[in-house]
Image (cartoon, rainbow over all chains, first blue to last red; front, side, top):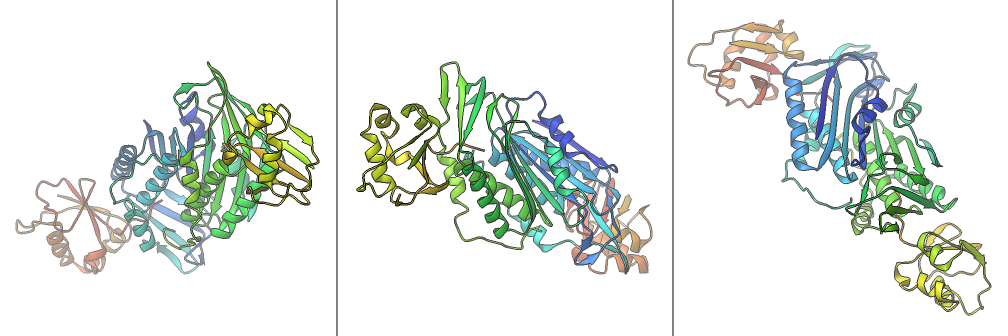
Length: 161
Length: 161
Length: 83
Length: 83
């Protein structure tokens, strides 16, 4: 399984990352991408931008651990995770997860799993610029609940190929 | 909700389709893509290519009905479905689903839902070229089971934003 | 009434479409399949396992008990394998 | 021992990192938080609700009962909001 993990200030190109992961391969039957984008509002209030702070070293290590975990749970052929840091304006991309497998079930499940974990375990913190000032985004209980659903024993079911 | 449905013989560009759906938008927070790719094997045997036959008119209508159904179930901001027909070589793309929403749960669920339905309800038939001749791919019970899971009442839960 | 055939149903029958005039006793899609089956070897082969044959009336999936009165086109095909 | 602070923990304490030498009675991450809390207003504010503070020893998430002996760097931060 080919894994690429990048933390960067620059925007990424979804199509280019899919192309890199799949070029010349004829064993990949399914590719899922998730792109997280900066919206112009947070908790109902307009924002001018968000700034992502991270813990260098730990962020990469945490993401790598979860990519390994995903690879142990599902038969993956490739994973790319890119997470930006620094100031990001509405409409710009923030995070990318690409998963490749021979069949769709594994690709979908692994991408959802990685996103749930990035939201709750990877050491990143979002601050938004609102009219009332700069505010740290609060963690969502719904994100913790979403991550919790993966704590049951891995399914590795062969359904829905 | 902006919906684009295309049946075409030509390959598609994942990045370009994501760009078309999201350009200039600041309300989209999550974009999921699913790309189905022709593998070099089917049921363990090598293939030279596959040919997709479809029922013109009905294929578009069936896809449109399921895009509407997805939009009724989840708060979507955009959906693109592209399905190729004709001869497709290993490594080439076959099908693309792109879903956009303000939050990730809806985008993931709608993309999985649309793929399960495309596999079992959209009038397309795959024929593969193997050493032993041209063989029609058999429908998989696991695909029917995957589609069945959506027949329960729609969840529309707010979890995992 | 126009009939359309796809994939191996088309290959076994040997044509992609045809016009037919079934007798008035043929009321449902299931009746139509039974009537077609008697039209020749290719039809008998195509419909040898009628349970797996799917049908659509005017581009909508229907079951074997669907009534064919008023149908513009009826299509027969194997289980779908798209995506 | 090196301490790192992130996000609003960093802002409230007023620095991103520092070297500290806690007394030997400070055995766990929880003990360390209690000890830091007494070092000044910024610390007290940062750790006013210790239950929501997350900690990592040498870049691994740990709980409040984790022992700090042998730690190279210990980081304190709010719940993560990446992705």
